[in-house]
Length: 365
Image (tube, rainbow, N blue to C red; front, side, top):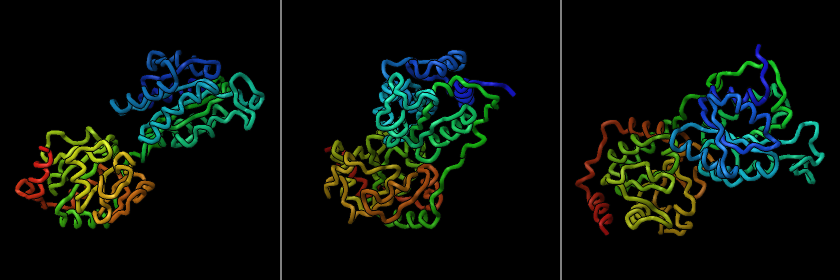
């Protein structure tokens, strides 16, 4: 069985995950890890940002373009703290980033070594960053790393995506052990969460009866790549399609059913459609204050009397800011396809409706 250092285990696992770049600033708290990355430079290129915060933003941008998460690594104390704004952004917007923070040698914790923050607690960056990561891990021995790397990627890439954090002592980075680098997909969930068939059926009945339906698209549509399903369903039920800031690319802007955006930075047509809808089908939308015009009734939304159907991968979001007629937990793409299948041959001739004409008239104002 081959023997690898902690840094080499991380490097080789990242390569197996298809990661091509690691982003970080070398420092005394991550030198063994940096050395391991450098030894694998033919497959794992190091990018050095101006600040650690910029490194997180770079990783998020890369994921948004490629769909491939990256690893950001930092040194002790200030280097780790500098990731906070970027991690918070990734956490709120649900983007995966693996952040590895170097920390004090295990046998030196609490001694106040260079850049350790230990007056209240021994070096504990996990506690500092806990509110803004999906999951955090502290490594006590090199033998834990294969499992922790798998779990970190599983947390990042399944369900509602988000950043994960590994706090990695210097001695664990440098220590070695006989290890087999695991295959990532051996412990990865590869399915999609389907909506409850009972509530899918109820949703289709409500949509069939709607006279002023609106589909409100959030970032969950983009994350699930549900573009085809959104377009197909909108055309089946003749719904106006309104997007949030996180879903600006989710629907063709030149489509006759597109009604732009709602909220405090919304458009006239978007606000009119969402505030006067009889049914809103919200997909992957958090109903943040920017979308809801600070929750002033009748500006963005009139819920109730508008009936809300909300689809989200995260049960935390269902009914959080507005009461729902139907709340469906599931993957946006999968749930929309279920609704389309349940509708079957049903299709509105929407272009001859008064509602469609109103959408076109509002778009000209």
